[in-house]
Image (cartoon, rainbow, N blue to C red; front, side, top):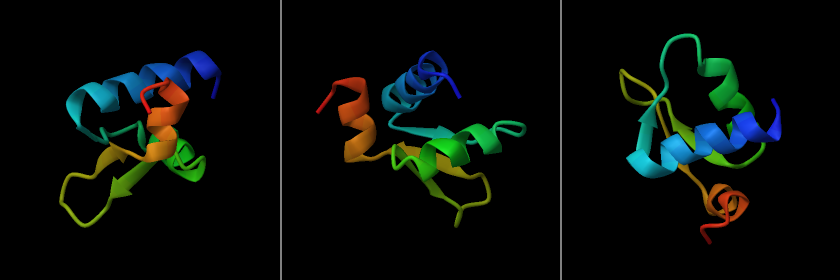
Length: 62
């Protein structure tokens, strides 16, 4: 994933506090999670992603 794509997804997650992982986007969110930028809550019926401190720092919102 390119930096612009990463920043775009992180901005959406940051604005929503927690972002639903929509069908077809699992791979992108899992990539962000593997980079340590988000955590995915898989316990709920609808998975959601939340920013980590590293994700906030990546956006410059630390």
